[in-house]
Image (cartoon, rainbow, N blue to C red; front, side, top):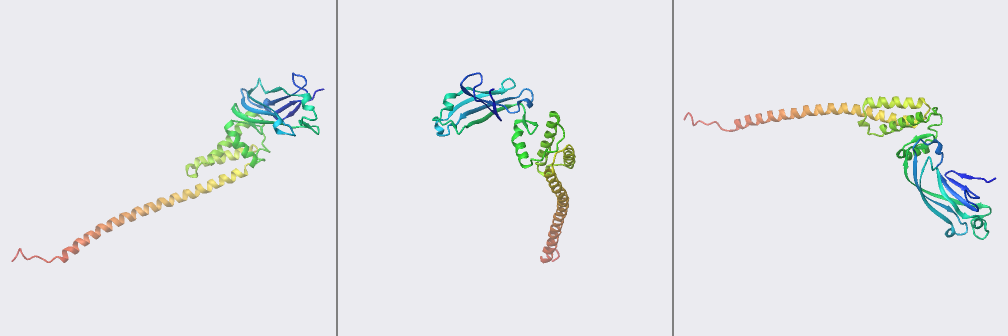
Length: 258
């Protein structure tokens, strides 16, 4: 019975697929059954059968393909003849081991991408990947299994993070109350968000300090305004006093009586 070897995205058929006496190699979309309806992936990739004696003799094929629900894999039926593959002097099969490499460049994604059971927009994938790398336990106790609910909760989490990334002075008390309620809700459904709670506490602390600072600024501005007005009044009074002083210095004229 022929054995099919499946390594993540790479499918290798040691005795050929729909052909005889050749190694067949295909690239397949991983977990395609869990992707939402209408998904498509445009990929440019290179399939390589590595020559372990000289890389220059490796067998390569470059392909580009739109993967979708009707075309989940694509590749080369006749990658390399089996007689060449098994020849001892060729350098492909060494000590019973064959090295196969796939270099993949994902050009375009239509539809959502699944990361740890959450369906995401392509624009969200990089950020969510980093989040799971830094906080691998984040969804370890997450309870909902329904794909739509999981997507909704993840969207809420990402929206909450986006909110907290805004400058604190742009967040109203209502915004912060809503953020706190959202955080408690997400924790309640099983997300582990201690790290995000610390961030929210920082924002609340900064906002509270800013609120007190705003009050003090208003008080100082009022006091400064009063001082400026007092200075203006004093300057006016000083000008009057100077006018009186200039009158006292000038000699009195007797021209009108003598």
